[in-house]
Image (cartoon, rainbow, N blue to C red; front, top):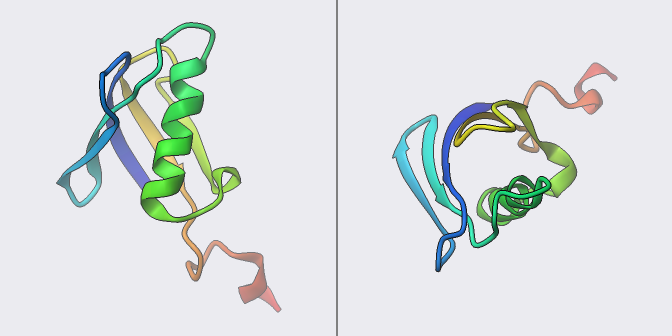
Length: 84
């Protein structure tokens, strides 16, 4: 599933706000230096969607506050188990 993220780095508290079915606002408690905020964003989304960090990746917008993120949820048609 592809979702739109508007990230706010260096926030005092972490929060995930669902704006629409595929759009979220995420406040990240890490500075946007050396990819630290992006790494923390993936950790926050991993907790929110309850999937491993390996199932989440930033598709576009690594240097922008507006990002497209892919989340692979268990039980979707993308899993390799369905090809057996």
